[in-house]
Length: 326
Ligand SMILES: C[S@@+](CC[C@H](N)C(=O)[O-])C[C@H]1O[C@@H](n2cnc3c(N)ncnc32)[C@H](O)[C@@H]1O
Image 1 (cartoon, rainbow, N blue to C red):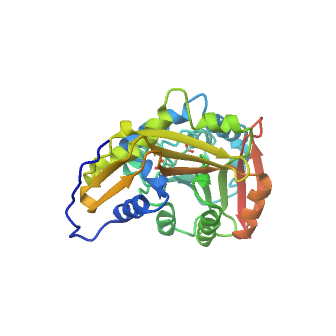
Image 2 (tube, rainbow, N blue to C red; image 1 turned 90 degrees about the vertical axis):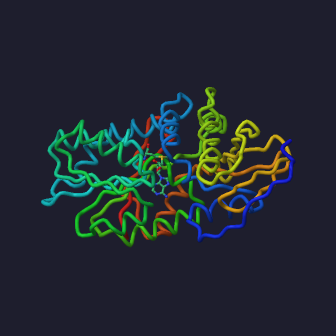
Image 3 (cartoon, rainbow, N blue to C red; image 1 turned 120 degrees about the vertical axis):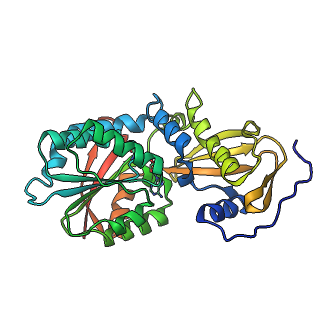
């Protein structure tokens, strides 16, 4: 399959971070692509469809938690004279955050909403949508990486920083600790951080969440190859790859990968590389780590935080863990 000799021009220009990440990942062994690159116009849309899937229990769990604790969350900043900032890291379409926004607006809570997302498309659409539905909302969106945006947000105002959707699961344990240490440098003593963690549970429930019957998660994964084709003039044929989800109950890592159905060579013209894939070889695309409560506690402590409280859904599938800096 596709074994003709491939040629590419060597690179003449310095390259962007996306370009060097793709080159590094696809020439590594085992091959990988970073999950933050899933999100473009199509990726944003597919992720919204994933959130609505019956199998993707995470959305309903977090919706339930935010709905049942919205008054309690609003009360954290009740006495504050100045408007506090509701910073939403990886806001997406803010489907769940809207529960808080609606409640805060209804209760005349004095706040500014600060969504952050690497996807420019997500921030543009969200700002337009919120201004239309909540004309009085104060909103300042950042289409930037999480930490780059946090460094730009003014530090004097009290903040509630949201990191929802179990996005922390995409980080390894060491990356998570390093990430929270860096967040803590941008926080003051009265600020709070509210993180959505997906908890360890029955293996089949987790596997189904990343292998839905309608194949939306598969499309979401394959879109990464389509994006590389479009942006780097590559010739990935998406129908020569299978979507492979797996879960290790011990480490709590749910992984997604794309498996090459054949021996094949892919030319990525703009990067000046040809990559070779063996039949059955995997390109790892995502880790979604599931946590035990003891792991959340040690992660908080090792990154300089204390847990204020853990909020749960009725099945205890998910927790929103609220942290304060030590
Ligand atoms: C799993 S979705 C969660 C969306 C939303 N918070 C929710 O809970 O439904 C992750 C979001 O984070 C954004 N994202 C991923 N990596 C990012 C990064 N490094 N910096 C900023 N945003 C990022 C994506 O574009 C996407 O909208």
